[in-house]
Length: 131
Image (cartoon, rainbow, N blue to C red; front, side, top):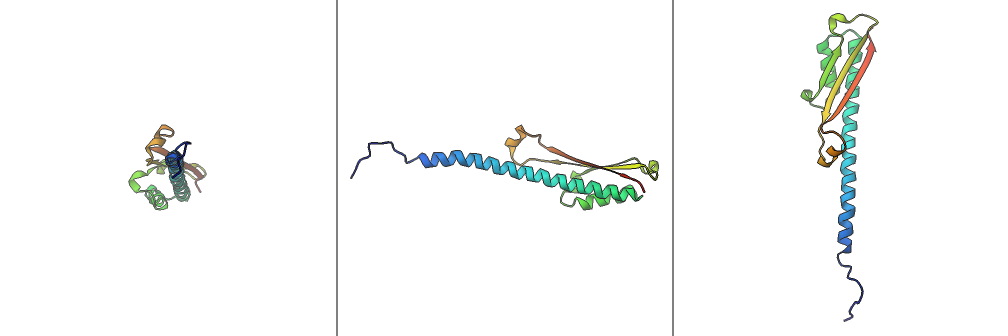
């Protein structure tokens, strides 16, 4: 049996794994949260465009709200805030119509709340000319 007179390296790999794994998991969770926020933004942007297009064609507010909710099917209806301006009786041909859709994305990784606000507000506004 030979005796080693040098250092004992039996726990070195475990310590290195713990250090590297922490950084990798933090990056992975950050990427996932940014992906969720990006998805919500794209959905809200698409929904506001759909609603503005329908409003530009002279449709009622109820139809605009229904189209926005249908376009944002991956977000529950109660989590969407939809605003249409101007009011129906103030809309004239050639004037602008604006549809604003907002949603708050609640973060799943609590450590990101130190960097970005929790819930993260996602807002899209689309303006179109009434035909």
